[in-house]
Image 1 (cartoon, rainbow, N blue to C red):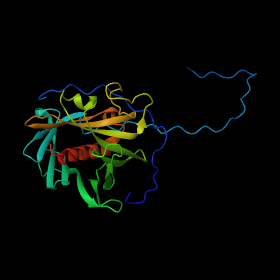
Image 2: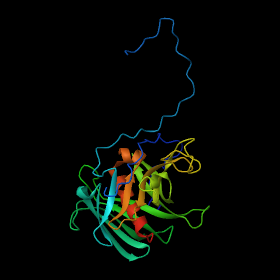
Image 3: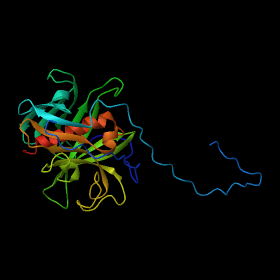
Image 4: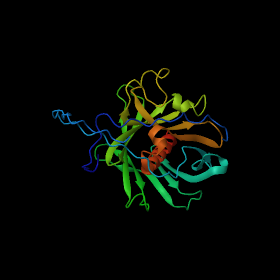
Length: 275
């Protein structure tokens, strides 16, 4: 990390992931307490029991729908909405070079509307560079501007697979989330031939949920980590991609700050892919 932070990194078993129904199919356009008896004796005190992990309470309803599409205005500007008649946001992508892409998210359909967040490239002490998601102060959500870092990771088992990791504060604990390329069930729910990327919550692992792609439960990675978002290419002329929140990402348990970071980083990952 580039800045010291006293907040702990979540270790050990996390709260169970919130599962949801599979994403919708692709659409082109879319008692009173009992008391002890008089002879009751309290058991001898045992060893202390560790406190359970905090349960995340879903936040207020998010401004983001669970599923939305990216409709092209031109090559680098897009409207976001559940359908053509429900467009709600604008994404502006500024391409300087292949890996130098700036993404702006506007709260509205016009380029002059308020910016909800932006993703930019920045010098890094541990790597040559990293990317930063800047989120402005929002009344009732953030008292001051927030900065979320995203670093490149090299997958040791697959030298040609690029991974990007976000570290986001979730209920006072920093959690890691990774964007990974995918052709799995979650991506293919958008379309039979869809390809894209999945965002994996590294702390949320469920025993028995992983395994080979064809056998594992939908909504989990091969190692049993929860998939919380997907960006899938649709190969349509005007609808360039579909973005889905899944599991705890869809329920709102991870919060709107996380949702904004997930969206900006997912679109950035697509923008540098060459598709």
